[in-house]
Image 1 (tube, rainbow, N blue to C red):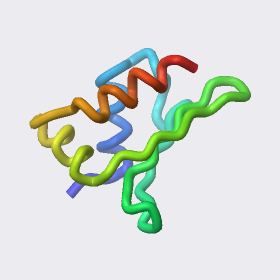
Image 2: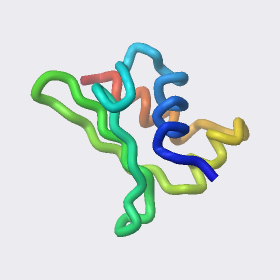
Image 3: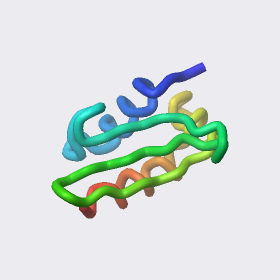
Image 4: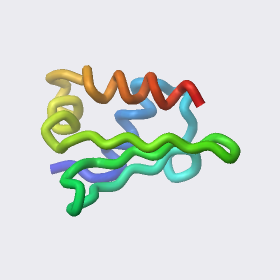
Length: 78
């Protein structure tokens, strides 16, 4: 299984310009939403993305990172 550090490291691996984990990027799992939540902050702005466990698992297992890659690209638009 994976944890928030694994998810955050993969996000920054896909785009190192985003920032640092626990400073500019926060990741956590929401049992209520049944998804991983990725929050990117820049100044007074933030973008929140939700990714289901299956998409995150595929990416962390180096099978497919399409969903996470699209969301990371969106985060860079801040």
